Image: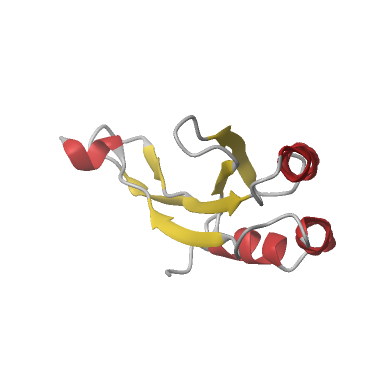
Length: 123
């Protein structure tokens, strides 16, 4: 990962506007194959995303549920900088969510860090 010390802003794009480089993180959760565990997990994750949206540096966070894999839930987070994303992952909010997921998951969550492709890169 690179150091985004300008709070997510990088060099200017081709049109002269500042290009924004976001830190994108995905978290995939698979609930145990039990409707009660899935419902409880959805409650935990819903609370987590509402509170995460209020964190400094959070551009956006969404919760999606799979249509093809019942009980699979995906969180997509976009952060202003590496530092803000790391600070969030070390926060009490993240720890609270992780503890609340105990006993509800079929396996450990899959967490991945993504490099966003700017629309300017596609020209």
